[in-house]
Image 1 (cartoon, rainbow over the protein chains, first blue to last red):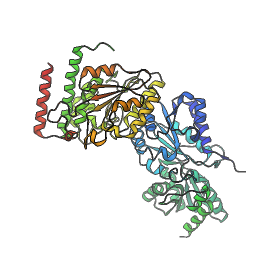
Image 2: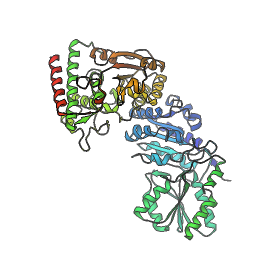
Image 3: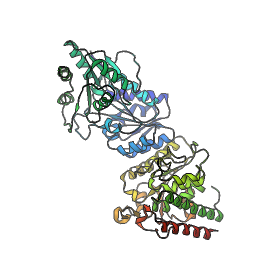
Image 4: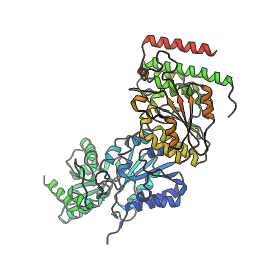
Length: 311
Length: 282
């Protein structure tokens, strides 16, 4: 049976692990502790847990000031409330000041399926990606959430990591090396490349299994870091497979597909097709049904791949 | 803090003239700049940099230094002037204000100039950053004080009041805010544009200890800056009543000098007035 884990619980455990290693880490909550995975940290390190209430702009400035004093602050809350809401604070107080602050957005993408567009976050990577020096992490399974969390604290500089809400299956088998900025080949293949990230990496891998049954060998790349993006793995995929299909739970404008196009169009132009959320506010409904509305289920991804190959 | 003598006061008043001279030097180099707010805050900033703050210009990153946050970043000319006068860098650099890739941007950049603690410019950011610094010092039991200068027009930014509440919650006794209440902002008088009066009541309601002073009276500035927290367990705020463009009579209290595009006649007049100020203080 496939094993799953709650992304927030996974993050919570990893945060405690990081907190034990580094006493400079402080957690800043915007009335988001229990929902965002801070509760175990709070229990372990009550003096290093700081509650700000629903103060989603001011908390970013506080994080910046704490970083000035040598702390490594992490702010975690609902993805849109730590990215879109305080964008100027994130840009100026953290990005422009080059502060060693970590932001974690949970329930990113449309994983807040029932709460609607005010609580969904499809542009977080796009907007934070415009800030010079920001690192963007988008881990795709529980093992990777742990590794990304630990790596985020070892990296000196501003980082944003997005996690989802629904339990994620374990996609990685055994130990592997996680390195910020280095994509991972999850499936080997020469017929085309599927580049996927975050919550829907699992869908891309399942799609590749479907394709395999039809005799199509799709390479699957896990792009867990959206910035800095792994140019080498993309250029190699373009050269060796000739076509790239991107799969993401983001707005297409400024998302993974756009980033892939930026790289290959200048370095090794090949056709790229993108699956993601187009120019619309996503409604509400069961999560899997919402994904299906945008062609993000494995069968749909496989169909798109087949049509793309025929073209 | 040692007793502050009349001689100290006189010395600081003379330094404040020199700070205004440095501001004028930068304006001369570029021909324009945010004058009004730099001059209204000049006496406060002088007191902080030349009497109050524990700083080491030769070691600008000294861990235990006091921090200064210029929340109203457009008043940067006064910060540059003070840092230059205090010896953080060679004064001749002031002449590069406005030049390509100058270390003196129109709003301060901590990565360009030693002594600058924060990148401000967008309003309503400084207080929360300063609050984070004060909280960080408190968590580590460091004897570090954090000083902030804000504009009164800036108080219309809601983020300030988020920060005010949090500073109060965390009982940041090591934090002192000066509101440079020059009563003017770019579109006119603060009262007409968006008044947050009565300021003392607002800050008190947010849990702050409040004092009102004449922001050009060196003795009153020093008493406040060396005598806080004004109440135990609270952050402190000084409502400093000031005059925009203080020191240049032709510009005082005039909204048009918020950003000054200097004419040669005005520059000459400003020089003359600075010389007169110095003579009076001999």
